[in-house]
Length: 337
Image 1 (cartoon, rainbow, N blue to C red):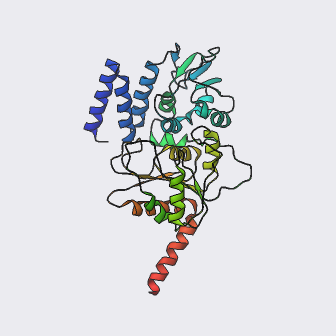
Image 2: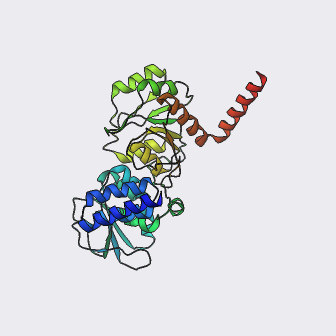
Image 3: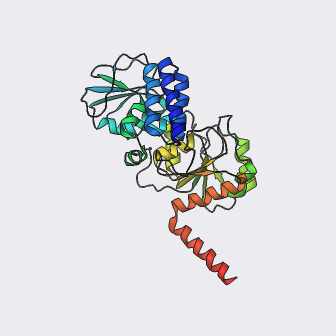
């Protein structure tokens, strides 16, 4: 980030804290995150969350101070934001004997499996305060354990899905829709132009999927795209996580599927439009929050070209030797011609 711009954002954050403008502070935190200023991001977002809670506990001062237990507050942002930083609960358990997490009930099985001993409660419930001496926003945990890119990478812990032991991931997962109205998305025809050339089983990982859209994708791509109808991804996030963990890689737009794949450590390529307001970094093709994810920006290309680039990138992530072999064959063919 440009130093002058950074100073302007920092001044805006200080003003918002002074005036208790918590909604504005969340927006400023998002700006810090897109600029990869993670320490500043987590600090202002933690301030916004902890200042608006009804719980009367001291703020957790960090891993150097001993305490009996910590209440982790619910996020003030959306599910994707939460999936990015829940991994730090694992770091917290190494320093605190008792951890109670207030979070979306859909996440409880996934978190309790990933972090044994952690107690999950619905945010609307009154949590058991016995043996809890402090509270912390989820971003407060990120502040202590993920304040810069290196620390974020070092502290990455994939969440654990309910997968069958010994069963290997297979096929490619795809997701093409988001309920956000602020995104320009590829058309069905653009997706079909790429999917028709994929020689691996395809699995729909699209939540809120419209049957007509899947049928159109199947017809235009001449591919059998599996769709697990019994699982309602928006209600059964644990089942959805098992679906995502069951594929070799994921090609998707920016949505919950992308964040879940990243949180599980599944190889994933996220297709980004120009100008969409998201929390992905403004620049670069990686994010330290999700080591398994690569970002492909549309730039001046059309959607079909961008999706083809995304598929090539995903193929190199899941089968690097196969990709090298294909590139070598292409070079030899060119030389022969």
